[in-house]
Structures are given as structure tokens and as C-alpha cells.
Amino acid sequence: MNRIQANLLLLLSGAIWGAGFVAQSTAMGQVGPFWFTGMKFALAALVVAPLAFFETRRATTAMPKNSIRNFTIIGLALFCGAITQQIGLLTTSVTNSGFLTGLYVVFVPLLTVIFLRRQPHWIIWPAAAMAMFGIFLLSGGSLAGLNSGDLMTIVCAVFWAIQVMLVGIFAVSTGRPMMLSLVQFSTCAFVSSILGSVMEPISFTAINNVLPEILYAGILSSGVAFTCQVVAQRYTTAPQAAIFLSSEALFAALFGMLLLGETITPIGYVGCGIIFAAMMLVELVPELTKRNAEMKAST
Image (cartoon, rainbow, N blue to C red; front, top):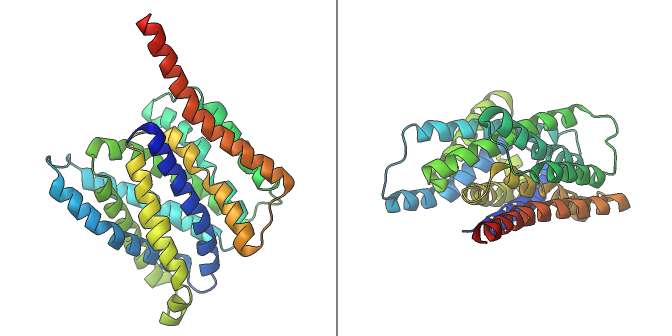
């Protein structure tokens, strides 16, 4: 897989997650955030388990030492991001949640510099700023009085950034993306279900009422989209991945408008264009820079 294909796969993840905001929001009327998160990731683990088994059978080398521990740490970051986002959706809109979750587009390169001492390609910084500005315009150009759900979603963005950064490290070093997905999903499902059993009531009627949302969130938003992320990040950098994954804000606003009656303002459409331009810059500038350098080296 080349970098262009990897980034397109990340864009697909963003689209699936964008629609997932709708499922996550509507489910909160029947099921609590811990149980919903636990069930969707348990389903995701079941979806990816056969792929992880097949991957293990085909592997020619053993996984590096401490791989399962590292995958579990990613799962804990995933849990923290997923549950804070889910709790936030109790009191914020799908559009606001998409915007605030998109803050990880800035947090990822910052964390990469702080903790990994890696300088991303220079285009990441203006592209990240463009993407954030585009997401801001997409939200209507203002966020009227941040409520508790909005603040919880900002916390969620920090954990998403940590998860994206860790996947960028361990997906490449282990070469086991399916096993990584299985362990992180299982960890998230286990922790969520334990806390849900203590903190939230649950009934089969409630589960049945939101079964379509659980199936979408478990199979597509979690099983498919997160696995696409893990696979694609083996072939691109974490800061570039964050830019493409931030397209979920665009898709969240789109599906919120189509399915929930939320509106996109005229300035929001400008924001969509800016987000698209940021993604194109991230894709094209490094490639053009590389080609120019190769041409100079050959002359």
C-alpha cells in the first residue's frame, strides 16, 4: 500500500465515523454511554477476531516483546477517548461534537514533538491550522457557551490524539494491525462493560430499541473504521493521519443535517472547502517536495 492509498483509507474512516456520530447520539436516549461503548467494541472485537487469527497463522516471525501490553495501552487510550466523547454527546450536538473532536488534528503534531521529539513535515502545521479553521467555520463560526458536553469532548480529543500517536508507533513496529485492533477493542469493551454494570441500568428492551445504532457503531464505526486506521497508519505519519481523520467533522455535520435536521450555514460550506484544501496540501506537498529533491539529486 502506498501513502496515497493509505490516506484514502483514512478518509474512509473519517466518513464512517462522521455517520457514527448520529448513531452514537440517538442511542443515548435508551442506553447509557458505558454500556453503549462496551457493546459496540465487543461487537467490533468479534468482527476483527477472525482477521487477527488469520494474521497470526500467516506470520513468519513472533511479535516483539511487550506487544500485547502496548496494544492494551492503546486500548485504554481508545476507551478514554470513546467514553468521554459518548458522555459529551448527552449534552452537545452532533455538529459540535464533530468540531471539538477534530481538535486532535492540532494535538497530534504537538504530542509528536513533545513526546517523540519528531518534527513533522512543515506543511502539517499550516494544514492543521487550516483544518481547524475549516472545522470552526463548519460549526457556524462560533460555539455559543461551551457546556459540560463540549468540555468533555475537548478532553476526548486529547485521548484521540494519544491513540493516533500510539497506533503510529506500534502498528509499524509490530506489523500486526489486526491483533492490535483485537486487543484494543477487547480492552475497551471489557473496561466499559465493567463500569457500565456498576454505574448504569440496562434492559433487553433498551438494547433492542437501539440495535441498529449498536450494529453500525460496532461493525462499521469500530470494527471497520478503526481497523482501516490501524492498517493505513503503517504507511503514513501520525500528523498526516490526523488531518485525514479530521474529515469526520465534515461528515458528522453532513449526516447530522441529513438525518437529524441539523443545519450547515453558508459559512460552513466554506469550512468544508478549507478542510478539503488542507487534506490536499498534506497529500500533495510532501510528494512534490520529494520529487523535487530526487530531481536535484539526479542532476
